[in-house]
Length: 102
Ligand code: TYC
Image (tube, rainbow, N blue to C red; front, side, top):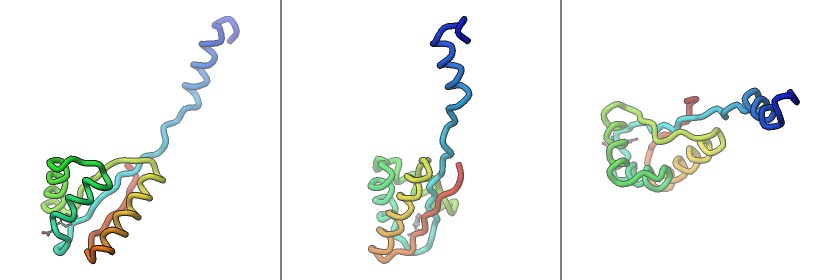
């Protein structure tokens, strides 16, 4: 639309083309064996939560069976799942971590 000027053309094309990337929740699942302190450490280390927030999320998982640790792009979410599972296995804990479409 030359009559509207270049800025209007650029704005219109962006409105049509810029689609937000699909996002994924990284979810921790409860179990009877992983220590609470280990889960809090995971939330601080891999999800950048402060001690108070990490403790709240851990207790929510403990009571409700699962909890969202964070929401990320697909690649970042998949990497976090792998890092958490590797840390859990290193520690000898059965902690399970999954990702699902947000
Ligand atoms: N239920 C565990 C316990 O009582 C604690 C726990 C919390 C384990 C969250 C896993 O994702 C989890 N030690």
